[in-house]
Length: 264
Image 1 (spheres, rainbow, N blue to C red):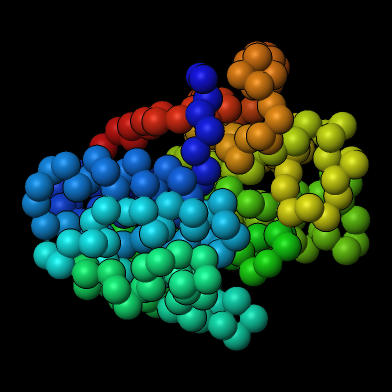
Image 2 (cartoon, helix red, strand yellow; image 1 turned 180 degrees about the vertical axis):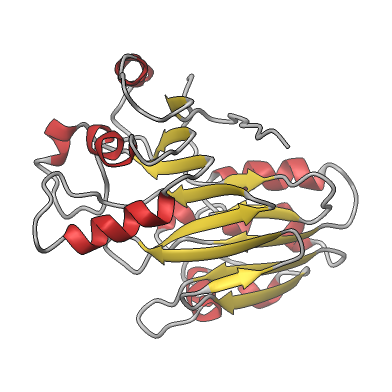
């Protein structure tokens, strides 16, 4: 398996900062937890969840550092129609679905409902706009000492722009313009997307069409369709590589465990 099967989870490492920074808690969150736990030291971190669909939360109960009292975490999530972060996580970790409730986790865990706006920390800031998805979902922008990473794993960009969606497309383009890295949902081909309008996911052709002239340096296409084989993703990668006239330094289909380094 060349591209991987774990669901949404990325880690952002900032040189000189011990605190770790994570976006989304899909099944990859479990593997990351095992890696961090193996270091054998106390951990401090912030976790930003885009929305509470299962594929973005499945790893949450299996994150080993949550079960160690010497660790401290803050978890952020946008409000869900008046329901806050802690209520959402309590529901996912109720004994109907899992034997461990959120109150049984031994680490210090602060659940924060992240209203629209910007949060500023010592080395970075985080803000978001609303994605076009089936539930309230964040498109996060991390600004780290002038380097910008945008994380949009679930966002449906329209195939055709009209009066109903033009304002959203303009807001999206202004938000991602000039990013050093854009990680964006590209579950479908355009042909597949035409049969799945309103599902809350994009096709890779439209993502490129709407972002190629925005000064984005690296485009990473994510949220692969479960029915897309490695060979199918290879073919998409080859087509992306042949695109001319874009501002990208690099555009690729994202792979499991892929590391992206941004120069100082």
